Length: 191
Image (cartoon, rainbow, N blue to C red; front, side):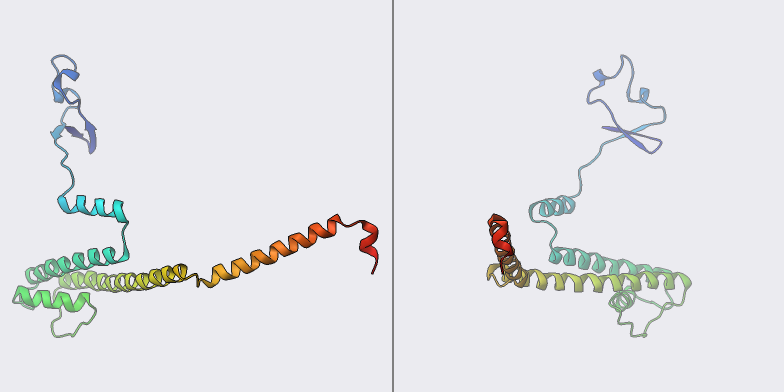
């Protein structure tokens, strides 16, 4: 159990016997409240375990962002209906508008008339741009990772081939320097 006092979270002793004699939880801090700290939700725990096990892959990030924006389309569509009911007579029209906006299509068939609706539209537009950027980056990252894995597996990595060549040249130069150092000085001067 934890006590919340002034915005600070303090762990309380697990048993009342750990407190001073005759003191309850209120003795720790006046005006504090006790509340149990619940573990994360099931989806949070699932995601944490998956990230620990495999890391966050670009595909997972894309799914996560896609799911977030699908939920955002529903929420912003409903919110737009509540804020501007004359322009959006149904929730479905509000969600259609949200899809148009978040995907940056913007047919212009429905446009918010209220200032608050335009603010919501601004958030959706910025979110739509970030959604497209992240999905594009995830797809590109997948292609790049596959190409790198294929290059390593086939030993066709041009960087590694060049590095091997430079290493061989360095060894040859080292051997030449050692040979020249080992020769007597009078032999080196003769042409």
